[in-house]
Amino acid sequence: MRPALFALLALALAIPASAAQDGVTMADRLLHDRLLTLDTHLDTPSRFERPGWRFDRWHDYDQDGSQVDLPRMEQGGLDGGFFVIYTAQGPTTPEAYASVRDQALLRAMAIQRVVAENEDKLALATTAADAERLHRQGKRIVYQSIENSYPLGTDLSLLTTFHKLGVRMASPVHNGPNQFSDSARGDVKHRGLSPLGRRWVAEMNRLGMVIDGSHASDTAISQMIDLSRTPLVLSHHGPDAIFDHPRNIPDALMRKLARSGGVMQMNTLFLRTTTSADCRDGIEDRQERWEVLSASERARLVADRAACPPLELANLDLFMRALLHAVRVMGVDHVGIGADWDGGGGLTDMKDIGGLPTITARMRQAGLSEADIAKIWSGNTLRLLQAAERGAATR
Image (cartoon, helix red, strand yellow):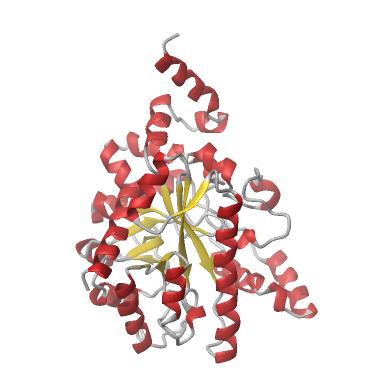
């Protein structure tokens, strides 16, 4: 048997049945595995600190709700992405800042511990060039990002600390306004960015870090586009045209982002009207603070979690409508994928990353070329990293 034919048959046997049932042809899978695939928002590090949870072991979504681990990265052909240092929004007081700073540092350490424990399969990346190098070596790529700069308090020098730890992307805010910015959801406090938030943008540019506008208000996103010397990413976002939600943006702002060179990474959330994400966000923020909750607060959290309606997800058809709408409005150079895995994301017919080849198959069916699909899966993201690096080097 010829070696090439043998390789094709071996690959066919390796493809999970669920992927084949979703219409993934051998040509689709070959293309998917040939591409460098990155997701810009992986919330999996929230599990790294849980006793007994191992990233190198296969987990079942129906058992523990997790969506990303090493075996499923291999199954779904996900080469890597941005692993998130997330902290929930809290009081803007010196005491709260000190506590949440330590939480963020511990999460960064947890990410690096998991990489060290799996050094044969994982590696930290800090530059755009690292991605291709590690991909050639057969390793999964671990970039680090900060979701919510609240842990910085009012000390922007902490950005340098996180940069030295390898962080290359950060967003100013999560749900509700903080010291840097108004949020997509919450009261208007600053009419966009605060004065400290404007200084945060300048410091991000100085360090060569990619600014992430997801969770910020539309006004704040527009201001960041105007202020930043390098293009923004919206690491897990969506279009209002598919579903008018505060966490999505209108076509006009999508076009402004594209004109500036920025990229919107398609989220799987906020794409349909019957979502209980608002309820879940409040619960997840409290869950993150479980260790400091009193017994009565824990009991109340458990009760509230049980009462919260289950998240009603979009399906793959709707996700593709959103992605292709973004391509039509912004151009293929300005669209990527950031599905919010392990952060509430997923689809009714794709509960974890094992089904990612189906997205490549759907893009092929929609008429996108291999070059275009490569841009969406990683090329556009790496371009932003390169722009941030050049911006820091030429300041």
